[in-house]
Amino acid sequence: MNTPELTPQGLQFFEKFSEHALAALETAREAGMPVAGVYCIYAPLEVIRAAGAVPIGLCGKRQTPIQAAEEVLPASLCPLIKSSFGYAKTDTCPFFSASDFVVAETTCDGKKKMYEFLGRIKPLHLMHLPYDPSLPGALQFWLDEVGRLCRFLASQGGNELTETRLLEEITVQNAIRDLLWDIVRVNADGAPILTGMQLLPVLESKSFMVEAEPYLDALQGLRDELVDRRARGKTGVPAHRPRILLTGTPVGKGSHKVLQLIEESGGVVVCMDNCSGIKGLDKPVETGGDLLVNAARRYLDIPCACMSPNPGRVATIEALCLDFRIQGIVDLTWQGCHGFNVESRIVREAAERLSTPFLQVETGYSESDTEQIRTRVEAFLEAIS
Image (tube, rainbow, N blue to C red; front, side, top):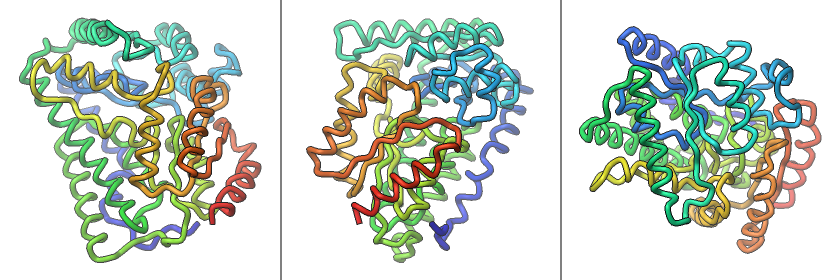
């Protein structure tokens, strides 16, 4: 698929965002701010930042460090877990090197056990998630975990949490979510202006925000440029390309194989319902009442396959299919990710209720199955067209 000719200038900031983030991290460290490496969107960013620390994303999305990880971890683990640990073991991720400690979470058994080895490399705090947020006491359990995190942050050089600082950070994170959500919606309101591959670094950037003001300005600039282009009818992707919802496990630079294949084969991903995409963007933290409780509730409401049952994911997919006029659903599952693999059947059933074509792709980070997946994706898109 050819890259659309109309590429907003605002994308340039995000295409080089890791460079901005590393420079900003160095400035923060020089100012005495501790850096918290985080692996998951369940990590409460508002709380970490309000405590005076800087959260930075660490999730492994490349094949390169996996071989080193398999010297310690089973080869049957999912590539995301192995890549994450491999980067730590080889100290080849600049963001991990810059982190003073790690904030981890029990989203799956593989990650939970991997963190026992990761904790030998760098100080690590493990947050325990309740597996059914609807159970009585689940919110209080998670709130206690957030409180335990606050005490850990204080022990690592952070500040005492105050209502004023927490409200400031809630306001910033809510604004970021609103702008990202606007960017995705404006882009897909009609023939897309940008492809999913072009939007990927924009959506990924939310895990690497260090300085709020320039980041918000960049998001605002991109959103405004998309709004202007939409008003002038300046789209970039031909309207006839099938509109695809990519759901399932997270993707990023280095693990974008399936996303790229969809768009090379003639489709366009207008929405990514995963951790590195829009998941949770429509869930702000309420600013009235007990702010810490509000923050805890917001994160506990994120519909991930680690929750059982997980009705929120099906409800989200059904709403996205209608809102984004989805013509096909591709459910991506990393090999060894049992939660998403089992849940794929539930997503398929939702697609059948919506009469929306569905394709599950189970793969790893290796390129060895690229052509096999391409053949399946091409057949899937041809059937839609």
